[in-house]
Length: 421
Image (tube, rainbow, N blue to C red):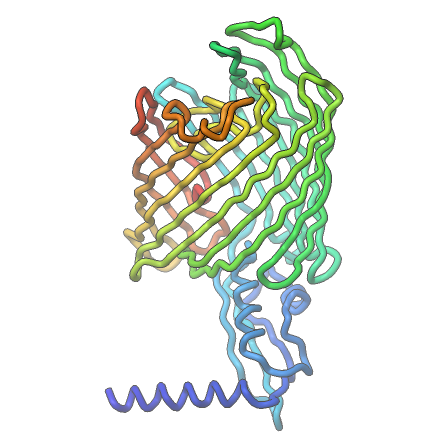
């Protein structure tokens, strides 16, 4: 035991001495990578040949690499080269990045919808994402997405998204409900900028056309049965990311602020702003546990409209609640779950989870007191399983079953690819 303590002390002193003096980087070498280009790793790395050897810079580079979709795990080694120069090795364990995706959701009202997609997250070995999906939610929908965070430099990138989504949406009138066939066709262009290791912004615009067609339910003289509107959307996103990953485990804090302003050509769907912030907090619990939390706070212009922007939905915020069962101009959602690894062997593991999803909404044209109205509060709890391939990016097949704890609630299964949040 005494020998082990002495060895640890010697190693600690050596490490502090190594990185405290003016030692220089002779060369940055990348190994273990197959599809991911070594030139790309060096392009985004803060550590450069000829510069001072700095352990903080190296550790930040390793964290940045572990956040890439193409990297399952990364670590570094330092070896003496000559004189006061050292070679630094970044060791990469790659993910498989050509990934199919599947989301299936249903409730005890026999609602059924699914989304099937395919995406490549490491196109050309440079962390470029290209993919798309097909969705069947009564009607057919599809989308194509392109994202290259480091397209122009190690800080500037670009994202382009096209989608044509069609669903059957509930429209909530004064005391009743109607169903409309809703189509949203859009093209979006965003510039991506990495301010520093923890802070990023996105800014751009979206041109889209919304089309509503009445299908069934109540009618109102104040609500048209057909509506087609051209819109422009200006979007800004600020992200603070201090998450650390170790295979299926996550720890740390992340915040994403999304601000949008929408202009319209129809008074029935007037100009409005919307803003929401997602806060994430993850904590390792023992050797096999992970506590995960998400809070969303959102507000929009409080028009009294049946087409309010925030929805209560199975696949977005509350598991088991159903497919878009309500809408509002404000939203407070809290998701918490405990994930525990039940089986872990080489490339594969199984997690069990217990969760509570809760939320409340502000009625269109209502007041902030709506958030405390019992009719607007929904609480669901349930259990789930995660089947995880540790060497394939986002290869988490999830099954959750949620049961409503508030009055007159539903229950249902939610299937999908990737953790719920």
